[in-house]
Length: 242
Image 1 (spheres, rainbow, N blue to C red):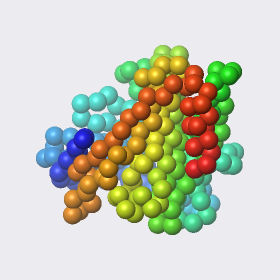
Image 2: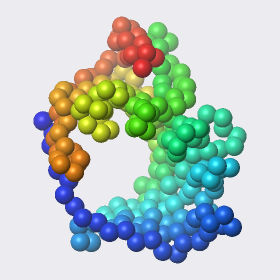
Image 3: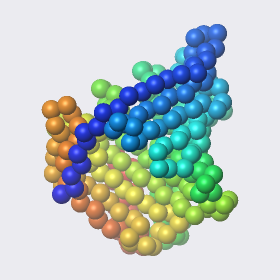
């Protein structure tokens, strides 16, 4: 059983805030200090934020500096006027899909994350892709998502994976907040490597303390062989049903 304990204090400081004529934030610097200064994370806007016609954040670009790690640039597009599949649902501020580009100049990597799900054909050995909008329950909790992550190192694609996650509303209520009940992790570059394709299930209810913090989990990880036609069909069928 894997156990995770969370017991830390933190403070947040915001400064250098600028606004547009609608009093929406254009730029700011946010510093989060945890564990008496042992961990400091500073997020700084390096481009003006953009908003859609409903006043929701549509675009941002920030640098993130964290103690012990190289500084990264994170560019997030939530509502692109030229993309009909991203943006927000009509109710609340629930994101349908977004695009995130993470640049690490020190490691010479660029990671692009999109809301996509892959379907693998064992007969042709190829993947097909489709945008999969995030789904939420009536309380606004995430119940379905699939994030494809493509990593380029020095301009060459070195990793291409996606994680499909499904949380049934009933399981979220019974077992805890943000429970991952079913996850499929696929490595697109190495579809025949069993060690890089897995399904993960919660084997027992997650445990939380009185403040709602996760204190214990128990997971089962199963290796998948995508060269097996029956396994491949079962995965694709399960994703389609959910």
